[in-house]
Image (cartoon, rainbow, N blue to C red; front, side, top):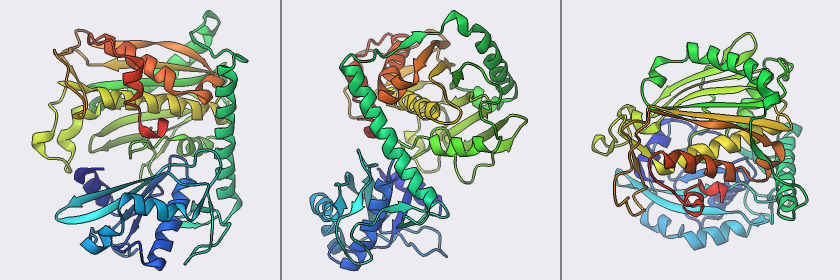
Length: 432
């Protein structure tokens, strides 16, 4: 996390389900360590994990204000010391990245917590405010870390653990050759189903925000086969599915499903329109299980971002970031895998992608990478990635591989034949 990202986080004003603020304190203060540990354990039992930010006024009556830690307090939160202290309370161990970020001469400690790897994390021993054997989670009622209070929170943790075991089994079976993994061009027999889905896509595109389509954008369609108009029986269940399947690898959910979003209800769909900083998008999710989206390129909307310096903003319609693109595609296929397991999913899923307003754009690499030796510029205005049929087992076992395949095909249109290993190295860390 950099200072701009911390400023953005504080600007939201309040804690989120994936972010908990803690006032300044030292690791050596047992009561303070107990509060921080409870938050870390709870984040580890949440899908996609979360962040605990130390050094922020956490009073509920106040908006988030950075107070910063003293130099003495900061000295107690060195990375190895912090990891060891937190690990001593976790069974199995938690994965935590520790960062110090300075903003306006005040320094915060950011604990980036990964979701559990295999089984939920329990509290290993008693501590101040901690109970041996307790399962801590993020409450569904409000953003706080608590001992699992109800069957609803317990079910979420159990389902996440079961999903992980299923993914592991399918990956092992495929590696052993027990089940061939299938990613295929869309079959002829699916044509009639695609006609129904295309009508739904056309409906969204007709009503989609012109702003989102005025600059570079993605068109994403994900749906099950065969077509069933009421695959999801209850309209309001669609909202729950979207919230449960959203991916939060990069600090902003994909798709944008935020508590403050106004979700619109249609005849057989729910929809959200987002225009916030660099996030310009519109998505619609149908009772047929069809997800359709228009998603603006982040690079084209930095002029709306108050948390980065204007001189650092990329020029609209000029670039396409390699890391942004790989991250977006990784999120799309991970999201598709989660949809496949939901009430709107099926044994066979279709992913269809389009990328628009490319002509004249240059590919850009992250600042940590050696730049291209010569500009990689798109000569085409749009590119449609062939719709693919993907077995649900494929998506569950390894959503990263089809994401890398899609990225390679797109980058070849810029004259760059990227290696699979290079692109895998750019995927969000939660996918490694």
